[in-house]
Image 1 (cartoon, rainbow, N blue to C red):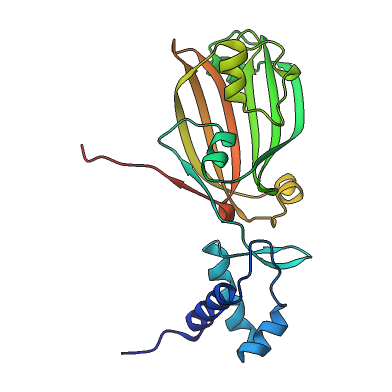
Image 2: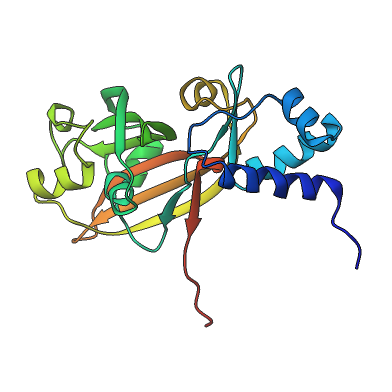
Length: 238
């Protein structure tokens, strides 16, 4: 039986070393030069191994900083309409949010169609950086009709779940959502806020959520770091 390729052996060696030495998420690894010397491999071989580990979510490389043991990937269940905060808490992670944009604006033609409004009716636009255990995970962009949830910007949108606010403060209970996933590449704003590289893969999740009467209440475009998140669903044979 043939031996696995050298870069695969190196990948497995690094992964075992992380486990055996008890390194924790956020701990820094030796430099590429140091690792190559310790393992006795050429740097191109090491780079290929590190790329595999990064794709698997074992390590993360931060531009200008170094290579670190990655945080556990955030798991998003696409079968259930659940707030980011609730999803993180159920996974034993500490959710966080930082408001980037908070404004009221007239709905353009596309938003008016999505919310079944007249063009120009007021909508609330919110953008937040979402974190899990202090690590950036996603950029959220959301819109809500002002007629449905007026003065939403006066609520605590950094520590409370928006879905909880809608239910508890406005009596709006979401019933279902249409969701669409699309792989995209990180642009300048994502690089600055998420700490990733230009062109790094992100998962864009577009969502339109409806209340119990079937009225559209939220439209969102969320970009998740592919290396820090995974999405799962369930399929049935027709």
